[in-house]
Structure formats: C-alpha cells, structure tokens
Length: 167
Image 1 (spheres, helix red, strand yellow):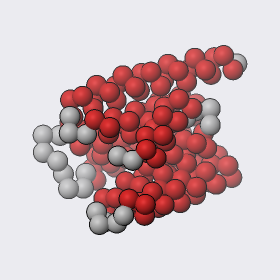
Image 2 (tube, one colour):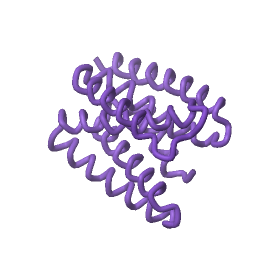
Image 3 (cartoon, helix red, strand yellow):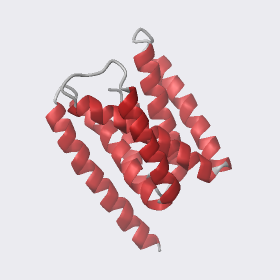
Image 4 (tube, one colour):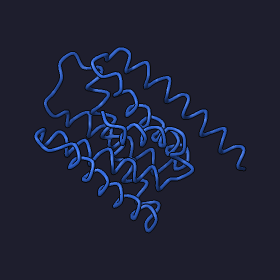
C-alpha cells in the first residue's frame, strides 16, 4: 500500500464529516484507485494514483456544486466498497468480483446518507478511513477486522466530540 491511500484514510477517519467534500473526494479516490488497480494489475502504481486523484477531484467538484446529491452518491460508493471489503475479510472463499456484497453495501450506504446526513457522514467516513488503514495489515484478516472496528470507533468518537465542540 502506498502512502497516498493511508493519508486519505487518516483524513477520512478524523475529518470526514466536517469536510464533507473531503469525504466525497476521498471516496472517489479510493474507488478510482481500487478499480484501476484491480482492472489492470499491470498498470503502474502511478497510473492508479492518477486515476484515483481524477475521480477524487470529480467528487470534490460534485460535492461543492450538488452537496446533497454528492453525499448520497458517496454513500452509495462507500457502502459498495465497504461491502466488498467486508466480504473479502470475512468470507470463507473469496469471490473474483463480489458484486452482491457491493450492491447490498451500496444500497445501505446510499439510504444512510440520504436519511441520516450528518451521522452517515461520520460513520461512513470513519468506516472507510479505518478500512483503508487496515490494509496496512494485509495478509492478517483477523487483525484487519479488529483494526477496522477499533479505528471506526475512534473515528466516530473523535468526529462526534469535534462536532459538539463546534456547536
């Protein structure tokens, strides 16, 4: 894992709700980077990073112009990515393309983002940030699950406390 995704993970974990455009851009980066890396394993890492940055920039522009719509789309993408990642961590046998877990996660993420705007931003950005950082422990799925749970809790608490201090 390169440092780019790790930095995005930390920023999402700590500031995803406050800087909603960062959440949307971060999700765009993660999904773009993941798709570019998985669709062509032969592409240089730089190409995947550039595709991720382009998708992230598009997400930021959408977030600034169409806030509510962008958050629902980000919820859909975050949920889909999380569904696929959770399946990868917990499934007894990996699927080549975990479309069903991604679809279910995407629907749940979009519904959460549409109905519980602020709290959805906190929870989804914390989950995605934690999942990105858990990839640092590749090859140890049990540890990855624990890291995701602990970091998600830490991110939710940090963002909620920060929000209370702002109010």
